[in-house]
Image (spheres, rainbow, N blue to C red):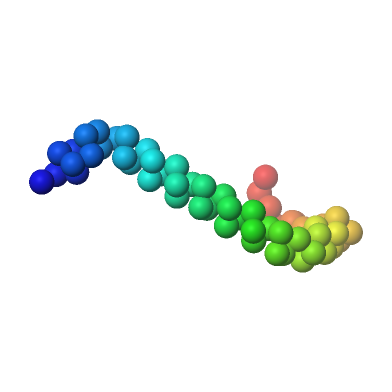
Length: 60
């Protein structure tokens, strides 16, 4: 029996799975950002003060 036979429309079930995965990734990313907020702020402050490392080699 195929997925289409059991669920009706394959694209509908795929859309639901994709939405669920995207929500999980968004939640995980947000959680990571909250956990590392201080380190990100310190890094951003360093870059503001000293500039990007290796910036002289950038081609753009």
